[in-house]
Picture 1 (cartoon, one colour):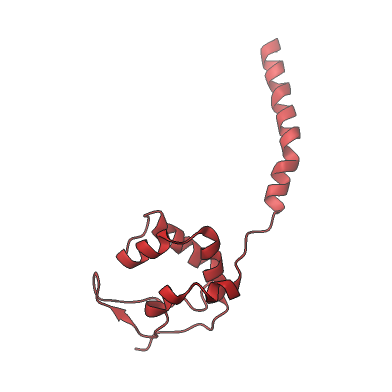
Picture 2: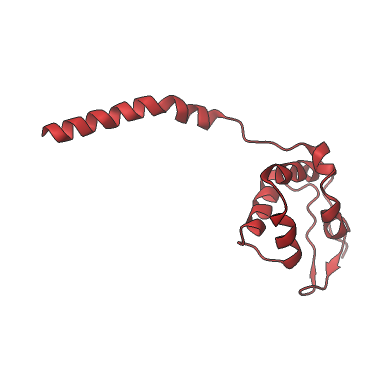
Amino acid sequence: MTPIVTRLTLLTALAVVALAPTWAAAQSAPAPTGDPLKGAQKVQMCQGCHGIVGWRTAYPEVYRVPKIAGQHPPYIVAALKEYREGQRHHPSMDAIAASLTDQDMLDIAAYYSQSPLQTAVK
């Protein structure tokens, strides 16, 4: 082997050894969680649509509003982030999600995950 390859291999090995504790700590760190009590204070803007069983909206088109009570927190957070980042689109949801911090999303998700699951009236 050439001296350059040997040095490169040695530097790579040293980097792996040096970064291993940081990587391991990041892997074992608990996922951030929300506070359902704080979430209860942040859902006023959600309740007007998502809090009414069987609710349909007429803007921008007619459709049934999904119920989010009882939904898994990771799903709610992912959906809100997709609205905020423009991957999902709805005029009301785009505006609401744009105003939320990551912690707001976690808190709202924690609140709704502790609420009983609701199904739409047919």
